Image (cartoon, rainbow, N blue to C red):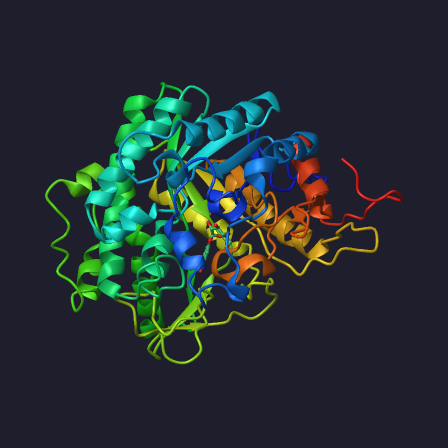
Length: 485
Ligand code: PNW
């Protein structure tokens, strides 16, 4: 991969996967259909004050009924892969026991539709929608939930193992543990630092047990991974205290997951940094061996870097870490770290635009886990898209964001990172968790009044990349008749 061929052309390796990504609760709707029971996100979004505008996933983009249209759009746009998640409460409504056939049938039909459209399916088992019944029994603070996850993984693998090649156990366990049980801005909305640490361990255990269950049930060719939102953390100044602040955040944001998953151990400083909270006696004998399963790829989700310094207790005053408004810190064990807004452009989320963070992340894990392939399992941006008079959406900011980040991926590959695919968040606008529908990450606009889909300019730009494997210039102007496939 030549970084600067004379033409400046950036060509990606042959076979590179060009995908888009979504998750069940953010798109499906149909929350009471075909035996599906409430997940923690149904409960949370229906609790007053938890989401902007009181938005819920009740209808979302209507994907459960319109999935054929979404698959057809991917086919026409030439996107080669699609990362979606399975809703646990559709497949196993109580979180235990036998599968509900209707739930599995939905995903079977979706996967068959994707394959028929020439789109390779990448399945995520857990993108945050824990069956409420399991939360009522303690959720991720309880060890049993990890075993329940392994059973669920087994059911899905038995049903879809013959036709899905890429399997992800968990999406962003950091969000599940620390936003769900620490700062409470995500479901189930608990605000107990010890619960967050217990949840982190049990999610790791779920990954390990789930990976074992998948290996046992999947055919040889299937590939298996986990998606981490490993943090890119930079110090505000060159001081030793700020360097220490970086280490503290890196420990509870990233290494609490990546160390056990990749190396079978917790970082020593995790125990010392959190000693005022817990003695970690919930970690049992062989847990770390269980968590340390061989993987085929490491999924990395990247949006923006953080800038930190020693000082102000996080959780008091306005929060600047971009994780939503809460009086409670998600940073168990790193409460004395301050977050700063980096200079420069931001997206509609207020997240700073900095492609070098993605380069740093890929090269870090390429060095840390040589031999393991990497996948960018999410990257993308929300912007204030404004449809023109014809309804078309021209979104040059999103194209610029994508171009910058894909150039960074290309540079990481040129520098030796074994990156095998890129999944753009997101295929369509969708329910952006506590921010509701106001934040739009889609390549395809969704009109929530009638469910209509309209590909934005960025969708056509990404289409060119997916078809050619060559990064197009970020300049894209709709033709005289508007954008076209
Ligand atoms: C990820 N944070 O979520 C998720 O995997 C997606 O479901 C989501 O829509 C996407 O990124 C965009 O936000 C995150 O607070 C949610 O740092 C919150 C944070 C990060 C990622």
